[in-house]
Image (spheres, one colour):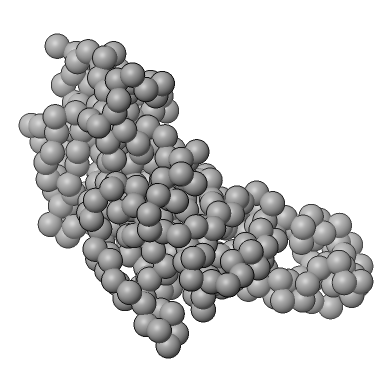
Length: 358
């Protein structure tokens, strides 16, 4: 029998408040985008549940009355929605994603690492100290824009800095598509300043280096110590890994929050559109070059080099654009070759099995 969600209110929510009641599934981030991929009849036998943790031993999924471990699978990541098959859990159907944040896996192995799915807003967290790095912020923004996620730059430790406005001004110059917020990660500031993005039914993620305050922000929003925290090294402002794995927390009366470990290596792949959006000024200039295949190095009629010479664009920014484009194209091509080899090998294996069967 279908559940009646019409009168459900999240625990801790004031019944007299103007915040509309949400269903148990909506509390986990269920939206019309996912509902249109199934039916009431299918949901009655295969209820939806969301992946909140991924471990080598399996996936933890939560839903309306569901808290279980599914067998591990390579095609699912934190934030995904599955229609649970109780008779054969490994056959649970993965729903189409609204968004997907991914990168080339760290190290020498040629593969894509799925970071998170179905995120609405990504808070790219940095600090008013030596951690602040424009090139890293540009990478994160390109990553999130390519994924179809709204990026917001959060600059923490503003209370420990004499001039946080300077950091904010530098961050705002990166892209006019990105909102910049400065705050103290402790106390009430996160709840107040992040409220526009942390509404019931929304899913947010904190991304950034270790020690910038991602877990502290998660704790501030929950009002409890659900995420471990520790300080940074004073000599270089670098943090220690306190979050060991990605975990999605569902907050009563608020949103779902993804806390992530600090990322030391962020290699882009399949992110050309995201890079173009971050560097929209240079991308627009490149379309005006005389030659379609202009490398913007020495060709005559290069609009990008002309803008550089006139001072319209900054040399350092141009260098970062070139670097990200080259990296993305290399990784995208390398991964495409890997996929092609895997596909050819799989075809050969199937042919051998078919011959043996005869």
